[in-house]
Length: 149
Image (tube, rainbow, N blue to C red; front, side):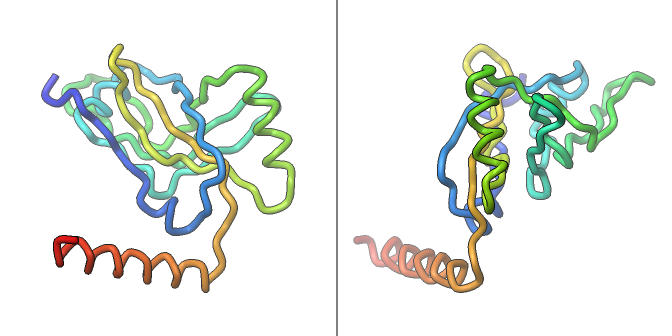
């Protein structure tokens, strides 16, 4: 393994949404997918989570095809099942059915056991004026960091 500290973040998530609650979920992956993730070849920018019955899936998460694989390579944007407890799934389903809440993937990482985990957040969409406020706070923080305070 080249790099053990793989952390692929969804930077758009905190800008587009208010993150209310975070959960850590396992992902059902194929062999070539986990190898691509360990190589850092994944993208969460357009990904979202959706329920299909009582199961939760992450959709539109791009994992690049593994370069050293043969004919058995995976499809880059296929649906991947998220592994959570039944209690967590039931709680999330009731919250998502409420008006205005959605589930967004925040960060994909490899834990200390070598398993791929996805941090998902229960989120509420920001309005345009909220996004302007976020930009203003980032600018102030950047100026403070530059001045050394």
